[in-house]
Image 1 (tube, rainbow over the protein chains, first blue to last red):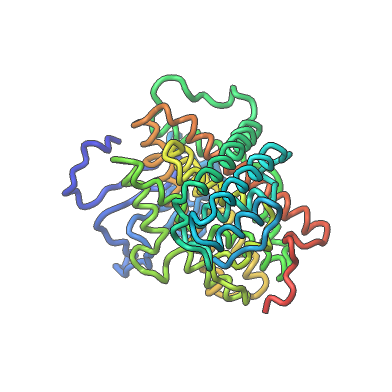
Image 2 (image 1 turned 90 degrees about the vertical axis):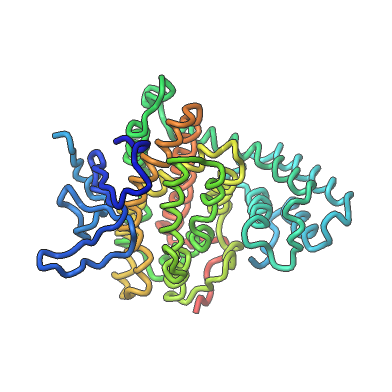
Length: 72
Length: 353
């Protein structure tokens, strides 16, 4: 990830955190399959990638407990 | 905050001095300096020294919300800054020793070699957070704590949580570029993203209200043990000294990394006693928020700072390890008291209604 090359005009970015969640910042919407907005409290969110979160779609740190690896 | 009760000669002299006009009595300044030097020399363990931790706590509070009946001009009074520095030196040494013990054998830290990259720094910090052992306050709260113990738990936490995020905010003007943007992003969320009622300190106050506790800052300063004050003093030491900017970022990163799971368990403890969303919202919010913050704090804040200023890596790890070490002592103090059927406070809660 080269943070230096990102331009101020970028509307959003997706960070694939090693062994962790997907971090999304910027201008975006999270919706259910039928298009309803998913309740959201903050501008930058971490989405669960390991499947173990108790607060999906958001991350609750459970990936650490199950030793989730993104390189495997 | 309201003026705390003295816990020994240094805090007594300091609190007495603060009620007077700044600079009016140079003799009293020198007397305080002599007392503080003597006490700092004689203390067995400054982290557990009630008198010195309370004195430091009051000195630092002048930089935050102030102390009731104390002239704001005391904040930069050279005589008081001299006392603060005199106490900070052995305090920092004690934190460095505690961190060294907690870090274990040096072979564990592949640091210092070459230029650290931000992913590697995040890995190091996540590894530190994962090896955090010792008795677990969160499991005790989830499964066993009585209603009185839940109130005690909030009282210990209130010394920091009612001004949550403030000590780390001192670091913002001391950083630049990527680590600065990361810290501001985290802090904006801590402060509610522009919504005062969503500020984490405000959420914590609502939790305290739900248990009938006083939510004014420092109202329980007299009740908590020295090590609870030391835990907050450590953040002020790191935040208020530019040379320790590595330590304050490491401290924040490790706080975020050791937060989501415990907060999930704390919420469970309060639900077990029938408390509703007004009380558990603070903890529920932290499960989600800190899973975001730990990623930003590990990689962009601490990692970004280590890339920009590689010589700070050692202090980043120091701040993280010292946070774990001091909080482990506070946890041990609380859990031991509870398991013995005692109050963990200096003055047990009488009628907290």
